[in-house]
Each structure stands twice: as structure tokens, then as C-alpha cells.
Length: 160
Image 1 (cartoon, rainbow, N blue to C red):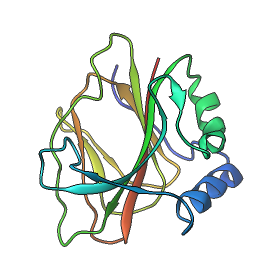
Image 2: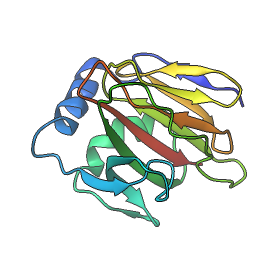
Image 3: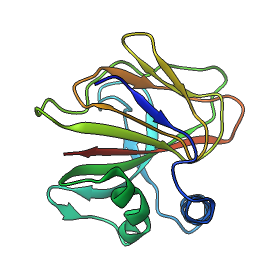
Image 4: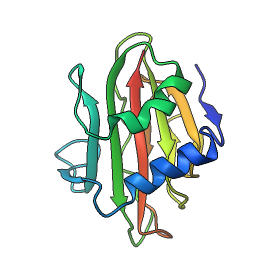
């Protein structure tokens, strides 16, 4: 499966509702040491919506328009990442989200910035709000920092 990009993935009102919730000062973000794994020297803020076969967030219902539109049959994990602005663009390292046969990953962009998702094959998906990129979960990719916005926010879906 090649990467599939869909711009304006959600209806405008659905997207703005989700964006407003996730950028509100009351939305809970948690510090995570490491971006690719806990041994790298970076950090990010995360919000885990779904993990270990269960809902892990009071905000899970806000993702229903995305879940329905992606036609998800079974969830593995949904995690949002907020990476603060940096002085330069840093690629955090290639990784695969999981190795289960037949699983997909979708990266949904919450805000516009000059960060991106880069794939080992050279393909780059720019961080553009209300855009989604869908690909095979075994495909190696990396996220980045941004330099032109206070933060870069994405929601990462792993699913069947």
C-alpha cells in the first residue's frame, strides 16, 4: 500500500471542534521522554486516546468522525503527539508503528506548520491541518519538529 493523502478529511465544523478541543488550555497533555523511543534525547507531549484494547481518554468520543470515516474495524492504538517548536527542523528517526500483518497507520494533522512526516522511500507529507496520510503500519517513517509554529500536533491511529 502506497501512502494515501486526503486533504480536508473532516467536515470543517468537525475539524474545528476537534482542533479547538486539542489546543485548549484545559486539554491534558503528558510529558513523554523520547519521541521514537525512551532512549533518544528528545521529548514530546502525548495524549493517549486508546491503548491495550480500551479507551484511555475522556475525549475519545471527539474522534468518532475520524474513526467512522477511516472505517476502522479494530483499534490498536490512538495517540496524539505535540512537539514544541524548535530552532531547526529535526527528524526524530525512522520507525514502524507495528508489525502486525494487515494493519494501517493514519496520521491526522491538527495544525499547519513546516514540520512533516517523512517516509524511508523519500515521500514527504507536509503538516497541513485537516489532512490525513494513511499507510501500511510496517512502513518506516519519521516525524519532525517545526520552526514556524509554537507546536506541531498530530493524531496517530493504528488499526485494522
